[in-house]
Image 1 (cartoon, rainbow, N blue to C red):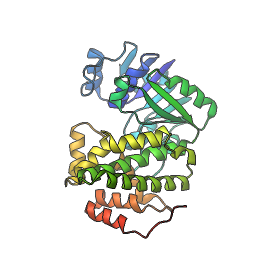
Image 2 (cartoon, rainbow, N blue to C red):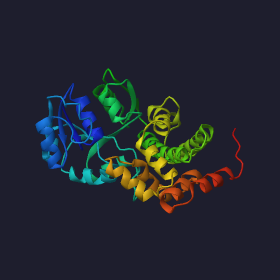
Image 3 (cartoon, one colour):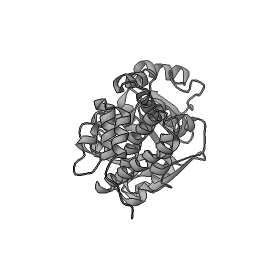
Length: 325
């Protein structure tokens, strides 16, 4: 079996390193300089400089080489997903495994929807608490793999199973996509609170209430309840890791909490070759129709309209009292 990988950033290279142990891998990137470097050194130009890709990973900047693969891992930023799918629209009978965790910024559509609108393919979503660096270290990790086709889902579980990676199947594609997208937004908020040096109890209070709101929105949009449980890798695991670990979204939020405006904070992250996926989902929040999103809207106001973060948190605290049960 040949596995294709579109995009050789941190996650794409990590998947090349992982999948290359069991399969022939065709890894594509349009960056000619990067491909030439990878061919010569089998190491990445920017990331994991001490790690070599397995010998059966073929690096290419010819997109048509990917057509040899039956399964293609899409390891590109969320804002590029539709364009990438359009680039592959002439491919037939492909299975696309998307790794970006966001909503499409202009339409608020799920990324699987954007892919299917541009090419004829089966689409699955890989999501969980998996930093690329931990994949490279062979750390024991867990992830959810979502696909609406049960037979294909079983096949994909086997494909992605490694001694260091335990994969859980989930037919709730919509839920897994929403979970991954919203947890990135909440991680930005967690980072803002860390940047403000609020106590841990304050941070966890806000995380828990933002998580409840995100779950309610996802359920209203068609997700299933079981996806938003603590044992879920795409939600409980990933939310916990992203909000308290060294995630890029949290790091971006910390910069804002320290008083750096969002635009400058984004440039700082870009200079370090770090993508902030939560930023793009956050941009789509106002486009979500017929859902109550008080907390997510406050996060949007902080990041996109420069609202004072302490004022936003005060407004959240002063909302009408809520009942549970």
